[in-house]
Image (cartoon, rainbow, N blue to C red; front, top):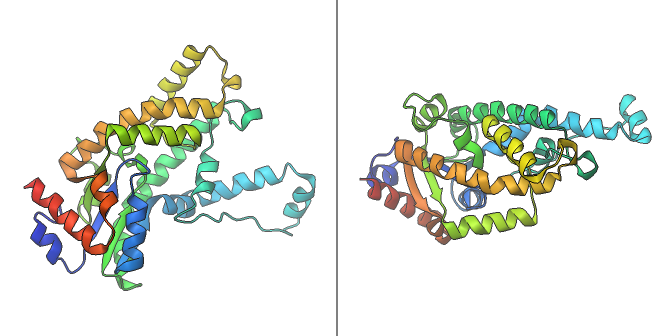
Length: 287
């Protein structure tokens, strides 16, 4: 770790931290607060994925849909209109929409193999965005003059690394430049995340082996053909299994590469000083 003690962290003139854990536990809130109230650069992995690495895929998908409309088709082919993704830190819907959900096209689904292809694209993009962290630390300081740096990772970071491999290239690159900090949830919080998700299902990233096994199990349990799958029902059904799959992987990253804080502790953070004290406490607990 780049900081071994609370004193090293608190005394660092240029702090660099990466928060990781399940979506919905406060990573982006903390990053936004630090950027607004203190001298912290906010590097969002999901934003980087949706702009630098998957932006063209996203816009091409918009164009593909627009070409179905005769009026828009003519305007597109004559370069009379411009279609772009308005993705932001707080609105990642363009990326989620592109990833899609497998199942019945009449219910907004896409073919399963197309879904797998987009998942592979996301995996490659996430790895690249994570490995860009050092470069953005340098840009944040050299170009924008920020003293401190926050890497706001996506919930799927644990799916693109091997936390038990001491030579994992992504975790090695990250640990060389940021302190990895897990936000650890509770069973009650996980149940709340499931409740929220089932109310408003959204596309997720799955490791391919896990995805294919889950898809086959779902088809068997529900007794349906691929083309008849309700996309929202499959995504909600798979979300519980995905959470259970991720929890030990997050824990392994923290155990081998960083530190942990509790979700309740993060929820109590209201100021940059609160955040610094919490990270110092996490480092003290690690000793």
